[in-house]
Image (cartoon, rainbow, N blue to C red):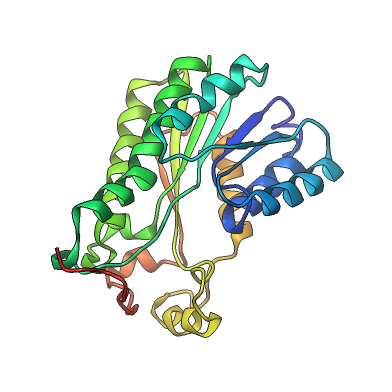
Length: 257
């Protein structure tokens, strides 16, 4: 695997923490040069960079608020202008919030779509415009295969990103391959007790959560599979096959529209 990625430079959004961190580590160990994108997690990103540089050379960090149009639209052109040509983009950064449909307010709708669909789609576009060839991998969610009303605008945005993945795979082939990985239960959300995840795992056919390393391995496979495009790999223990919404508690911070 390491030989396959020796000539790869990959931009991973939201790479400082959680699943993004594991993806960065796995790609560095496979020989890729990693650009660690972060917004607020500077300390975690710098710590990760130190670990990556202990594995190999050529890694770096870049900060950008992906909800800020100016910072987002200069991210990829700025890297290339600085001599950091890309041939792989992994759209990992996202925000997960649950809210009943009747309580969705316009500000929340815009925010959820901005980070979960608009930003990754526009980064895909910029990759196609500024990079000669390569691959794009979008992190989705197993919910794109089912109906979960309480996932609300997050779920809508991820389904839009799924559709964009398939459309781009057709339009940009053979120059750029576009695929996706759809995780299920992996890590408990920030501020949620681990025992809450254990309760949800009862819904998973394989009866255990997926490890971050499995998500990273799926990304590695897609980065090296030269004839695979337009595909979604579900790393969710079979959860997407059940079609049942997860019995999660609703968010308590929504307002009436």
